Length: 149
Image (cartoon, rainbow, N blue to C red; front, top):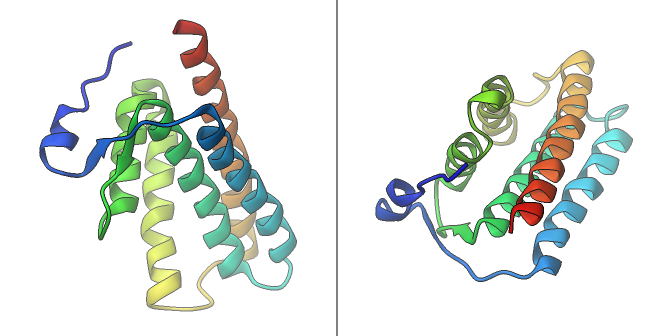
């Protein structure tokens, strides 16, 4: 499947980026580190566990961006661009996952900048479980990309 990222490029939301396999792997490693940290944090700080699980998803998406030869532009809005990029790249098959990613993005923003104590234990656990699943989706997509090259 060929995806046209021209709209994101022309709006200045992403830019071409020459990457290496080690940079892509590094993003996945960061995502997995964040998964471990989210699990360890969940018992004593659900807000942070949620935020860290979200960050794992963000790092996995950055790995996907790097693999496709792009990176987000510097500045505000990078998280929203990551959601858009994931939606374009993963496609219709993963619309439910993209919806969850975007909802988590919005909630994480509230947790970090507006209100503390709004994440329940069940919600933190769901965020963690979703992050694990999302990273698996990205890893499979990356493997498929390597096969098709």
